[in-house]
Image 1 (tube, rainbow, N blue to C red):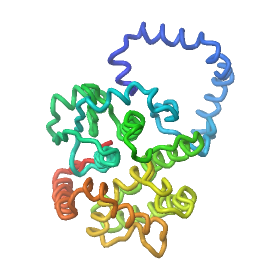
Image 2: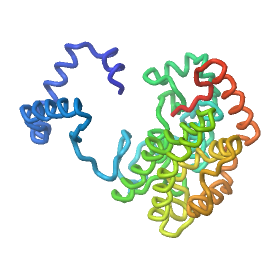
Image 3: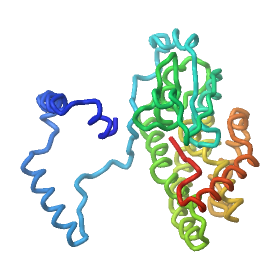
Image 4: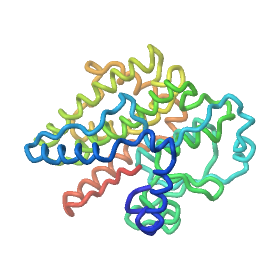
Length: 323
């Protein structure tokens, strides 16, 4: 939960009491750094920032997991109470038709063969249902399952994969812990690195800025090209023989990539530079479930042009990219 949201729902006295209880847990005390050392590190960091040379406070594993819950493996499908409950619960998806993050959820639901009610949202006039279902971020997508909302696309994908584990379709997320961590890492990379670099291209109207944004995106795509080679191991998808989490996470942007390329005269997934990704994109878009979930190319192009025209006129973003 965001810090501001915590402040809104939890009084200071409750936060202090929670912090005291948390710090009293033996396992927590064992891993927490010495407070005096933290103070010294902070002072040193603050001083070094003055001379534009800030050291890293912590190191980070090469596999950074997004903030989604990890649950036990699928070895015993019948042990999940959801397996017997899920089929009868109503499914609703709140979204905007052009959002790549909403497209992700449509893809996951389609791959699992699930029926659901889709409720289009106007993000400039947000519905009471959306505000009630996602009071923290107030964004789409939101999956409502049996009256209970699940927010944020990667969390929703994992929820779908864990709840509908017995549909007969291949899992989106591997059960092997290392493979699972790898998939979660690259899905997070798509959101943290690829999206921001691509958004810079999509949001730019001036030629020089667009060229610079495109140039800055190339190293990110190069990294994804290498990731595809390593994850696919010579097979069709990031997930191997079947579409997996990373395929859905990155693949949801493909129609948007094509749209921006058409408008700007660019080719982000150039086959000569990125043969792995270019071939993967063609195979991914040829999957029946993917074709059903993707927005119409002409409609998306018109939406983008209209939104960018509004953005230029109002100096405020008109094309919403939401998670």
